[in-house]
Image 1 (cartoon, helix red, strand yellow):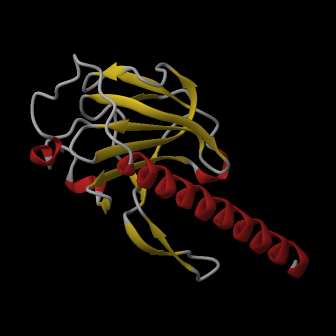
Image 2: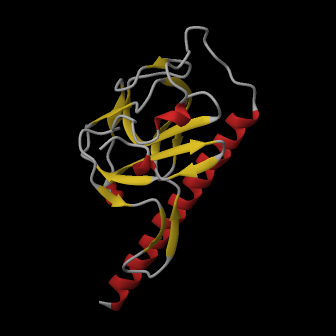
Length: 181
């Protein structure tokens, strides 16, 4: 029994390490995107500035059930504390993920622990991040509308969820404060 518990703790630690590394990669990517001049397709002109959309963004999933909130979280079994720069929502494999606002697909990358990850730029140094996707329905450079499908949830494995982030002026935001409920 002790060997199994120790093994589980090691597996959980490995998963947490993968998660931390993937979150650091997302942060580096946001920094890189924010540091370069904005690439815009002429037709991409948001109807409303992203910072004015707080509390009014569309939902990225059909149902919003939080399994890990934004900010500091204590792991129930390991007792370790991690910081979630976004929110993890309960999701089913194959469930459609939607853009929360109009934007441009600026990056698609595969991140260990997060699978396919999409970053949308919304102008004015504002970004949203969508992780743990399997199927992708957009490509880099695409202009997307609010509520447009971006992809579908991949095999979420032991994480059981979809990871979503909101960034404004290089600052992580609590996504639940931005979503319309």
